[in-house]
Amino acid sequence: DVPERVTVKEVGPRDGLQNTAGTVPTATKIAWINQLGKTGVSYIEITAFVHPKWLPALSDGAEVACRIQREPGVTYAALVPNVTGLARALEANVDEVAVFMSASETHNRKNINKSLKETYPVLDEVIRTAAATGKKVRGYVSTVFGCPYEGEISVERVKAVTDRLLTMGVYEVSLGDTIGIADPRQTNEVLTELTRDFSTEQLALHFHDTRGMALANTIVGLTHGITTFDSAAGGLGGCPYAKGATGNVATEDLLYMLEKMGVSTGIDFSRFIEAAAYIDDIVQQPLPSRQLSMYFRE
Ligand code: HMG
Ligand code: MG
Image (cartoon, rainbow, N blue to C red; front, side, top):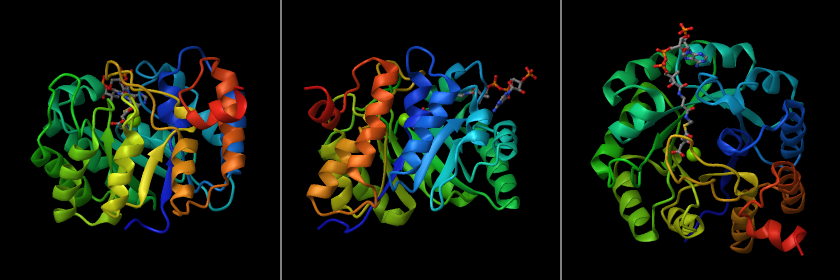
């Protein structure tokens, strides 16, 4: 049994573009986000307000957030690591923010320069400050299924970090397969454990498709009743602090599968594929999306 309806959160403008070779002009990002906003998608992570030295590709976040056309019914979100990032996000009037940390000490240190213990008060301050201004906060846990530095991550560790984030006030935790190492059996094991402690509404899945396992893992997520999945148009992207990481599962590949399975998303497939084709042309590296290759590369 799978849910009748799921939410697909488009993270391409942030997770995809943060690690794309070559510069995508700000006006192009804005045009692309405007196009994505007209596909029926309900959530777009448009940029990150991290230190610009860490993600130079997203240093134009404020301009992007201020100049896009906001479609009704679409949440325009941004990733923030701390209150400095939150202040920049609020200044740019984003609808929602997402905080992030890793289940693995080493990846957390490489990604945000802190131990797990040092990270909690930083995120707590972000969540409190955001709540005081009426903004919702989403949480990410990275390296849930494995870490590029530490290897296997215990599900107990994942539970502990997820629990802390939810207790601090994030409305949902997106479980990140940062390096695309999860397989369906492991996904089943992790979700069996996590759904004992957390409701399916509190969990989302964020699969990078490094080894082509993302859709298979998604099916496992659906059978556990998970109803929120992150993806990136075209399968664009990677993580600059996780060696070998590639993009998120391609949104249009996910949409195709969900539509065939009778799971509705509210997203118009043909409009979405046009938006994916737009960014595929811009980045001039053939994106891994199967649906794009079916429609536009014959
Ligand atoms: P730090 O150097 O420890 O920061 O970096 P700090 O607090 O010591 O501050 C140092 C300087 O940075 C100060 O400036 C701050 O003001 C400034 P100075 O006084 O020296 O002039 N600063 C900032 N400037 C702009 N915006 C900010 C900001 N914060 C501090 N927000 C920090 C710590 C977290 C800032 C840094 O490590 C960082 O920016 N990391 C971001 C890494 C990143 O973006 N990774 C990719 C996204 S995560 C991901 O892709 C995984 C995910 O997709 C899920 C998955 O797939 O698993 C979400
Ligand atoms: Mg990611």
